[in-house]
Length: 141
Image (cartoon, rainbow, N blue to C red; front, side, top):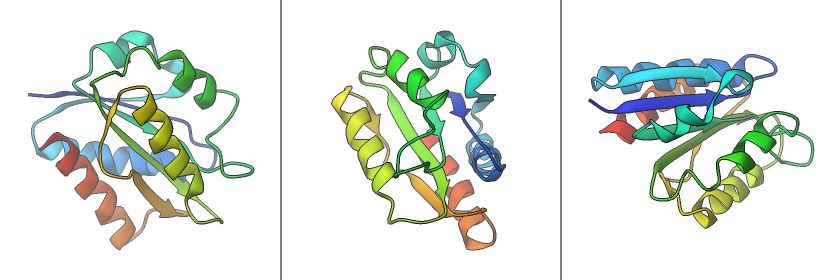
């Protein structure tokens, strides 16, 4: 059984809903999942996980959330080398540049980033919700 930590920041609830959907998918494959708002996350949640998922919406000029998620991501850069990491989040405008930059950044830390992340426009509904559940299934599969 894989230990999965899902650490996220959500302002409107869309990224939190994505975390819940991804968690459901991971649990379907028998994984032990902890879903944690970034403000409550500890370094042990990263170190002890077989699979780490990080979630943030696109903010400002297509960046991850800057007051909590950005400092957390920076703080774990030495703990993600060779770890399977999935990235997810929602956006309202733009073309996903923030996710491409985040994937590149995590790869530069030595993480084994799963695919190109999972992004949805606004709230995850219908096919977008299914995409999140499937992402959770596949990352632990």
